[in-house]
Length: 112
Image 1 (cartoon, helix red, strand yellow):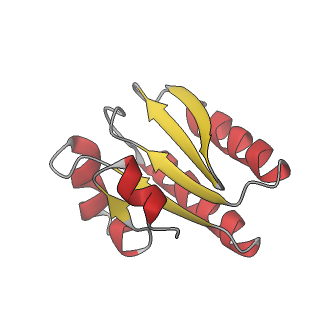
Image 2 (cartoon, helix red, strand yellow; image 1 turned 180 degrees about the vertical axis):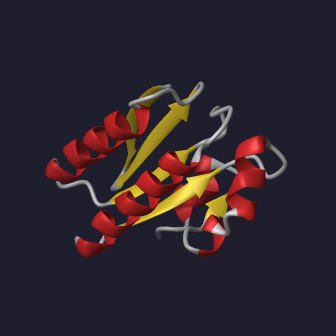
């Protein structure tokens, strides 16, 4: 799994690509904490290029959401609706906890 981040104004776009392997959710959480330590509070997790999301990564995403909201921040997701990741978000009802968008621009603009 590869994790990248870039800024769009006050929003940090975190791109997650590839396949999740052992230890990746922990690495993801560490990078997220580093962004919080840099006073970043508004996030878009771009999952469009992630081939699969497992229960550990879902749990870590929810933990990230909790950390962000404790600091008056928020997280939005971007996923392809009928992809494996999109289907898992639906099955787990994560889309009820986090807003899911089809494009990064839609997600970023939702913060305004």
